[in-house]
Amino acid sequence: FFTSSTMATKIEQLINDVISASESSNVIELCDQYIKDDGCQIICDKLLTIDSIHTVDLRGNDIAEKGTKAIVNLITNNQNISTLKLEWNLIGSQNSLSLLCDGLLLSNICHLDLRNNKIDGRDGKIISNMLINNKILYHLDLRWNNLGLNGGEYI
Image (cartoon, rainbow, N blue to C red; front, side, top):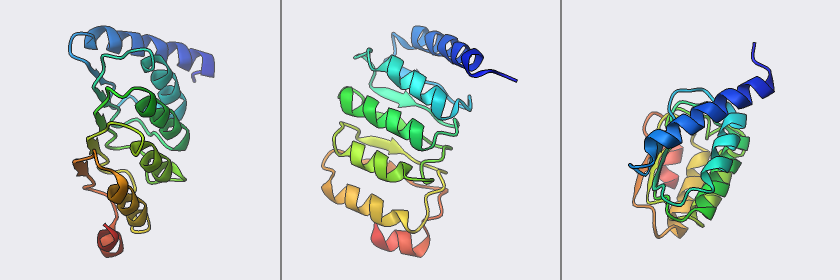
């Protein structure tokens, strides 16, 4: 089993490797590592200092509320980020979607992937309100969620 300091060290090394590999492409891709909220916090804190990033891909990392807060802090403080890929996380759980939608209104995200995030019909209203007030977002992928008829009607 990993202790939290061991996990933090592992994530820190993983981030450094990803950032080094991504410097020329301006894309941070850290997918399917199951870093969860604590790992997401570490990553977002590190990425706050890098202005050249325009795409952040955190697919498949079990990110929920605490990680979403870190992502919101990142996208609202780094206006160069325009693409956010969060497929296969837990953005539909707890208060995560509300936090993300509030943050999107203060960011320059124009491409958002929220496929398979346990977003349900009640969340359709949250998404609808964000879309009404968001003049920048032009691509939103919500496939493989559970919006259903009620969520679809809101949107």
